[in-house]
Image: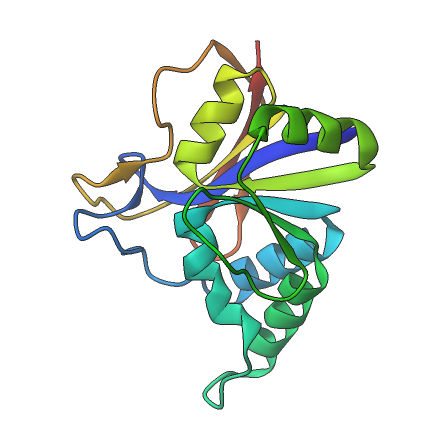
Length: 181
């Protein structure tokens, strides 16, 4: 049975992007980047909301300005199966599947059929899955920046959570891992 994990970098005030609607946190440093590469490499797959998937499509095609770490992350990202929840997308990239009907039934079947951890990406999607009781773990990666407004990590009120652990990850992040209480 799969475990659904929602984790994203966020500002100290809880925003995953700023008021422009674009990711405004600086990119992760080398150590945090390696952490995320290892994380993606270890996942059984990823469940994306449309918006975050469109941002992550950046990794689908090689770019001349990339360094070795970028190539390593891109290879790990491309190798992972991706399921994209969207009513508006008509096409997705390699190793990705659009899910636009019976989302709850699909996600519940995915949870039963896949072994391992499945990354949940996007606060709106994570909020919907939380309301369905499907998020098993939350990983909040706090970075030392304040955005003041924008898209919040939590899309709405959450049930009570219990902290499992906290640790420093990379150069400038603290990860707090929580589960529903």
